[in-house]
Every structure is written in structure tokens, then in C-alpha cells.
Length: 512
Image 1: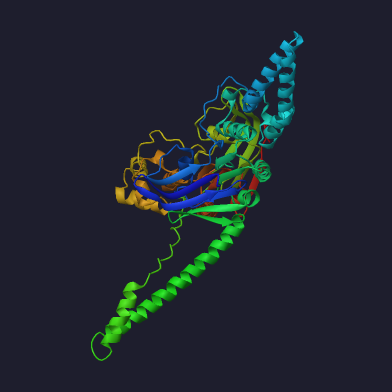
Image 2: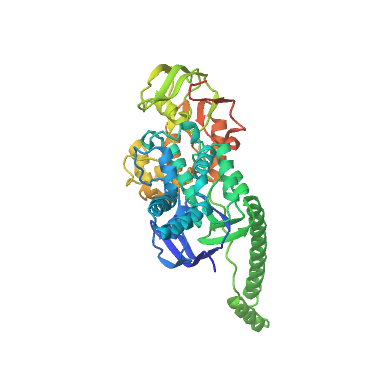
């Protein structure tokens, strides 16, 4: 029996059909990557599977007794608890069993013979379930996801959003549910951490579903791919590369079959028109009947229109310099100290470093959203900044993308706003939905659209590819390559910036 059985799934979101009579099965031990373009319904699928959303039609059935673990990046955590306490919380049941064993041994010490036997049974169970290796398991997960460098005694309240997400991921892995559901787990991981996660998932005997746009991660971690396409769920055996090859082959065959049928239909219709009257009329009527009975192949879905990002540069000139001297940034205390950095006009610089070192806090400070704790920085007087923050936060999430564009640029009418959004890959039906209801990829495209409409000569970009699919990443890379101004980028995706970045600067907690 399947762990998960989906049959006849039909669901729409915001008036947009996502699934129509879709079917899928997850079997014991399967490692499945969920892929598809931005807005296809990947995250919605996971929410339907966990019961966060109720499908409009069809059935989603889990095998009885299955423990399903889902990565909830918004789960409530006590800000006063340390990271170590949160991670050890994954073993609550084992600690409760240990307390029961201790109580039984105390009773046995008072002469209760039955209690001694019961305590021994509980100790055997603790040993079998790996209780005496808990500290080692916690340390291994913390090291793999880059939490150990922060210190497991650090309070949760001092963590950044990315660090918090990694903490929740580590706890989920330690909890060892029967099935894991992960939505873009590599968004806050650097390359080494993503590789560690892929290897950890590969070694699991349990099943998982993981939504990801990270091809390298998927190639390393999954044994099957579930493609969300054409309102259906199609499973392909093998990793992401195998899926791409198979899909390309199938699409080519579908196109050949469809083209051949259309050619035959056209020939038949031409014969019928020519011979509707006259001595061949009977034969023409026979062909018309056969044509009427013909099961026509659906036209292959065309590729979604590729987004086109184009940043508007200001007139040329030495307008994009940045000088950073002894800069310390953070909230209550420094996360990055004593940074010295020079960026010259027209340079394209990438900042790297382990997660939590302060890269996002640095860009937030340079963008004027956060005051520096020490040191100074100075842009040239003519610098005009464009800033893409990592967090997909909105002042009012009920506003539509169209309203956001016309509100930020009053000279644009609604049609012009929609055209600008469409160029960035935001479909018309999504342009009139509340922005907070859109997928992460669609929200990122809206933010990029707003950024492309404002002329600038210095771009500050904080992990802009986190939620983008492959086509959008390629388009953004081309746009940054063409942009004549200065770029300061934080990114963990080497493949994204390798072809156009001129300089890579690795920063650490004390600055470099």
C-alpha cells in the first residue's frame, strides 16, 4: 500500500486552476523531488497533503499511523530557549522514557523487584532507539547546517530568519518522522550545507517529498521527480537530470505525433471540401464521419513566456562607488565587525560566507534600513540605489501586484503596470490577486518588477534567486550581465553568478 495516495485531485487557487483530476502515489522509501515553474502549485500541493488546504475535489489519503513531518518556517519558538534546547526537544519522548526509567530504578532501590525488571526494559528501549547518542546526533545536525558556529547556547530570539529556518530544519531531521515534506529547504543554505542536507536525505530509509529549484541538490538527493505541469502530477524515475532528458524526449514525441495528426486532418479536410459534391461525394462523407470520430490529440503546451528582466541604468559616469571602513553591523550586538570593503563604479561583486555571518544585515545597513553599530560607509554622491531584500515581506499583503506597481509609479496606468509585470513573468490573473497569496517565486518576480522600473546605478541584491525557477534565474543573470552599473550581490548559487561576476569577497564575523 502507498504511504500517500492522491486521486482525482482538483483544486484552484485565487480563481486559477492548479490541478485537474491529478493523481500521484508516494511509496515507502521513495525520495521524490517536486518540480515545476513558479506558480504551478508545488507549495500548494504540500499544503494540500498536510491538510492546511482542503482540495476542491478528489482524495488525498495517508496510510494509517504514518507520522508526517513538515518544515514550517513560521513555527512558534520560545525566544528565550537556546538552540541546543530546541534541538534536544526533538527527543522529548526519549527524555520522558528516561525519567520513567529513573523513577523505576528509584523504586527498585527501595525493594520493588517488579520495578527493577520494568526499568531494565525501558533502558533496553532507550539503547535501541539511540538515546545515548542524542548529543552526538544533535552536534552532527548542527554542524551540517552551519548552526554549530553560532554556538548552541545562543538564544532563539537572537537568530536571523535564515538561522531560525535552519534550526527548524535540523529539529525536523532529528525527529525522524516516517515521511518528510520539505518546501525549498536549501533557500538559506550555502553550498556545503546544501550538499550535507542532500547526502543526509539520500541516506534515509524513510520517504520524502522535497520542493526545490536547485538542480544540483535534486540530482544528489532524489530518486524520482514529480512534475507539476499541465494541472497534472507526473512521476518520472531517476534524478533531476534524468527527468529533464525524459521530458525533452516525451515533449519531442508529443509534438511529432500532434504535428502528424494535424497534417493528416488538414489533408482530409481539403479532400472533403474539394469533393463535397460530385461523384466522390459519398467517399467525402465517409471521410467526414471518420474525422468526426477521430480522437484529437491536445496541442502540446507551449513553454511559458520567459521573464525578461531589464534594469534601467542612469546616465554613464563615475556614480557607483562604495567605501566601507571598519563597519560593524547587527541589531543589539554585532554579527559582522570591522569590515573594510571598496567597490568601484561598474564592478559586479559577490559577497559569500557561511550563513549567519551577517551578509543580509550588511546589505540592510547599506540600504539604510538599519543603522551601523560602528565604523562608516559612504556611497558616491550620485549613487542611486536599487535594493532587493531577502525577505518577501509586504507592508500590505492584501494589495495586488498591479496596485503595488501603480502605487509606486503613479504615471503608469493599469495596462502599463500589467505589461511591466508580464515582462517579469507575472501572469495577468496573478497581477490582480493579493500579493501575499502568491507563491514565493511569483512574489520575487513582483519585487524584481518594481526594481526594474526605477532607474538606478547601484544594485544591492540579497539572495534574489531563492524562490526563482531556472528560467527566471537565467533571465536575471543575463540582465545583471548587461547592467552597466554597480552590483553588490549576496548569493550562495555559484552557477548563477559565475559567468558575470567580476569579484567574489568572502566575509567572516570579524570582516575581511
